[in-house]
Every structure is written in C-alpha cells, then in structure tokens.
Image (cartoon, rainbow, N blue to C red; front, top):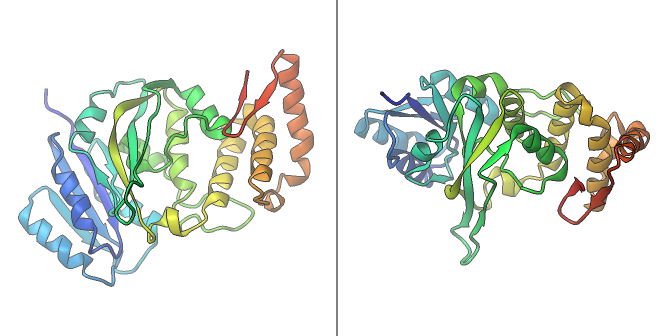
Length: 308
C-alpha cells in the first residue's frame, strides 16, 4: 500500500544563514512521498535567493513569497494553503529534524491517535555543553495530556507544532489565528498560545497522544529566535484560559486557582490583567471544595500541581 503524501512546511523570514540547514534536514527524511513547502515572509536578506536554488535542484520543493510581511501566524496559514499532503508538520527555519522523524512518527498513527510527537533536543551553536534532551511518555490518554498541559505540567510537553506530525485537516481546523482576549493582545504577532491550542484542540477529538522515544526534533537556541527574545508567558496563559473557558469547563475553577498560584509563585503579576481576577479565589475555593468532597487533596511542589 502506498504511503500518504506528507507535507513539511517551512515558514521563514530573514533566515538566509539558517534556512538551508532546515531544508537539508527535510530532504534527508527516509519517508516517501514528501513535499517541502517553503513560504518566505518578504525577507529583506538573501533568503529568497537561497530558496530559488533549492527549488531548481529538487523537484519536491515548492517555494512562495508573500508580497508583504504578514506576520508569523498568517505565514503558517499560507504554508497550509499551499500544502497538498494528508499528513504534515511545520519545520521552523532555524530548527532541524532527524532523518527518521517522519517515518517513525507516521508508523505510530492510527484512528485513535491525535498526533505523534518525538522527544526533543535543544541545542546551541554558541555555547558548548548547552544541549538538553526532553523525554515524554510513549503513550498517554488525551484526557491526561490535556489536564497535564493545563494544570500540572509535570511532563513538560512541547507547545511548538514542529515537534509533532499531524493530520493536515486537524492543523487547518485547529490553528486559531486570533485568540479572543480582553487584553487586546495580537496573537498573530508571535504565534505563542496559538501553537499550544493546536495540540489541545486536536487532542480533545481523539483518544491517545503517542510519542517516539527518540530525540528526533531539534530546536536551535539562539538570540534571534522568537522564544528566546520575547517574553511569551502572557500569551500562553491567555491561550490556556480560552481553551478551558470554551472547551473544558469542568476544569475551570481548579485551573484558575492553580494557574493564579503558579503565576504568583513566579512573581509574574499577570493575573490582575484577566477578566476573572476578582472571581479567581472564590471559584478556586469551589474547585478545591469539590475535590475535597471527593476525598482528594492538593499537593503542590516546585514543578507541578497534581492531585494525589
């Protein structure tokens, strides 16, 4: 039986020095068939010249350029509009994939699986001995995955869609361009919060999350990356609030109390900017009372908050 077409989508902007490494790692995949879609977000450096050379040399690479810089999230949308695969992933132009990423994640897909991630490695080209590898459970129910991602955060699952293979229909359906929020933050600016929502919204429609127990996703740590050069915590907090409020109300009271406590512990007073700030303690107490009635207690440690 023929393999389904897989789309590797590379949104890029001013990465003339790095994008070739990302494309090379996509070309090195041992899965077939693969298409590589690269959309340049109107770069001002030599990125477009680099891409043109790749398109001439490789028939499975298609390149496009936006007339204007539309921001990262709309550039993700542009990639998805050009992609023709049944499955796919984003590969950000400063990062890399191991050669077996596609084949090993695709091997774990079934009808009940929401997406397949791999363990990840964060590496730095500037500092020696700065590599870190993060490992995750090989199989987890989506209920446990969602509640851990929202409250406990004990597994530390990645929020970047680069770390996973998805069905393209789920990527298209679950990328929310503008996340509603009372702070009037522009979620198109960074893609923070939007990315985690892809995982959460996809997971709620399936039974399992699967993981390849190998570090096949490689994130480059450098000063110009979005995640290093910007404080994105408020975007992720608002993204989680949106998901809980709209799609996971049964967890709402408990999530608000523990999320507020976590932010207080970090001495990051973003709670005062949220519409639920005046209700957070009383609703949280309701959540705690409900769990006490069920004979459970809350144990809070440095890394996570989980029921025991």
